Structure formats: structure tokens, C-alpha cells
Length: 392
Image (tube, rainbow, N blue to C red; front, side, top):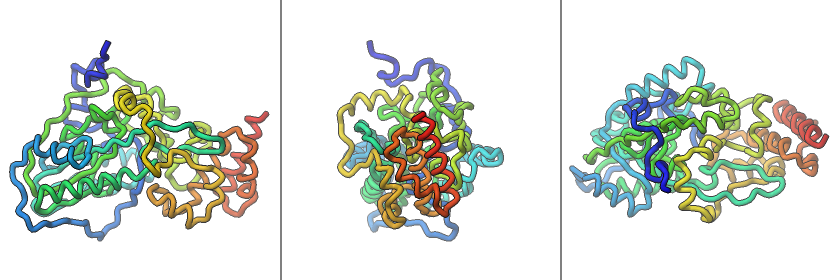
């Protein structure tokens, strides 16, 4: 029997909730991701592309979809370049409540990120695109930590290239924004029907679930608008129930101060009460996506597919603790970590090492337990104590 999920419908979704009535969830963003993102830098100039050819006017939805498909973009949609007033209000409210902790990203300047109409002179259309990155996870070996799927390879860079090609195909002036602080990509994606907001605050597409990275193309070309998706999560609460720290207790709102992904990317010490919950995770968290029924379809279709060449699902904990600062920065340039300081990657590796229950890894943590860095010393001491606890 074909389930409602396989038919592209969420159970009990006849009555549209706030996710599909033109209102963004209270986080107005997403379960925390930070790959490649940096705090907004005042005074920097955006990269605007201008082609000599006159821009196309009146591009239809079908024409846009064909162009995108030819470039390998999985989902595309378009919406008029208009302010995201409600999203801006949500960001300001949640920031006042402290739910963003010290995150900046698109929340730093909502007066910019929620105003696509200001991102390019003469802008008419905001094109939203999604690229699916899902691949089966290989078996994790001894002494290895886990990265979240969206960091296995630089999917954002791939999408950026595809959107640049789409901008050239449309002609005229355009600007590509992928994983940047100047635009709330998920609100654009919801408005253009690329996906809908889930209770985990992720943007969920109909065919690829939430296993996608998002990007935006603002253009002076006039594109036929695509409708919002009349879908939502229905009565499903699996992500809320699965979150081990209660970061999603209020549906559609992420409390970053309780989010494992946030703490793996935040400066300072990881709270002790969250360390065991991280398990083998050395960065980010996929729990709320792993349990989402909307993700079952693409997982079945891509079952058995290997990750792309050069993808890195797992990392050596010992390497993370022994590589030089420069080696870590260079190899993991695609990841966001505070001030590009590799000690935060080592901090995460020490937590995963403590959770490994592998006494053979002790020797990699011991130098840090007697080292000069207070942050790493405390995490190493915790790691060694946990190894002893598991052993006992």
C-alpha cells in the first residue's frame, strides 16, 4: 500500500498550519547549520554579475524548471522580490528572547537578510534552488568521529556554480547568494514553493525531504512566480521527540542554547550535560532529519549510492588531535568554527573520544589533559574520566 508520505502528502495535513499559511516558524531559519558561514562584515561589497545581453522578460515556470534541470538543480522556484516582514519580526523577537545564543549569520542583520528587494538594483525576482546531498552512510570504523551529511563534501560550492550558470542563462544583472549572511534562503524557498517549513525548522522539499542545501539567485529578469506548497508536518512530532536535548520542544522554534549542532560550533566549553548526547558526532547533528518521514523517499531512491568522490563522512579522532593548526584549517576550510581556531575541532574530537568507549584512544587525549590550554585540558579530563566510567 502506498502511504500518504509516498504520495507527497503529510498525514493529517488537511488543515493548513502556520507553516503553510504564509508565516515562517518562529526561528525563521533552521536547525543550526554553519558550514562556511562567517559573521556579517559591514562594508563588504556583494558580487553582482552583469551581462551585456538584455535580460529575459516573462520567463515561465516551465522554462525556469527546464533550465534548472539542465544544470542539475534538483528543485527551483521563483517569487517576487519583496520584504520578508514577518520573518524579520520573528528574528528580532527570538533574538530578544536569547534563543539564538551568540549566533550571528542571517540573524545578525535582519534589516538586510530579510530584504531581497535591496540586494540588487532593479531586482525583480528571487529564485530559490535546492540541491540534494543525500548519500548512504558507510560503516564507521574504530576511532572515527562522524560529520553531518551536508558537510561530507562542499555541496554549497556546487550549488553556487549552478546558480551562477542559471544567472548567465537568464541574462541581465544578477547576484548569487549561497550560505551567506545577507539573505534568509529558507524564507525564499518557502515563498517560492521549493519546500515548506518543518517543525524542526528545516526547509522540507516534497521529493528530497530536508536533505538539501539551499541557495538564491536575485535577478532583474522577470520570472513567473511559483506557488507555495500546500503541505505541512501534520500531526507528526518525531523530530521533537527524537531531539535528546529538547531544543525543539516548541514546534517550529529552535532553542539554540539546547541544540547539539550549535554547541559543536560555538566558542567556549560544551556544557557537560550535552557531551554524552553528542556520541561520535564531531560537528553538527542530523537527528531531527534522520527521523523525518519526508526523508524516507529520497533515502529509498538513493539506497546503496556511495557518497561522491572525495566525500568525508567520518574523520579520524586521533588525526584531529594530532594535525597542526594549519593542516586542520586547510583540510576543513568548508566548516565553520569560531575564528577559524582549530582548538574547537579538537575540543569536539575529545568529546567524541570520551564517548567512544575505546581505551586504545586514551594516549591521544592524555597530552591535552596536562596541557596549557584550559579549554582543551578540561575536555580532555572529561574524556578520560568518561573512558574510565565506561570501562568500569
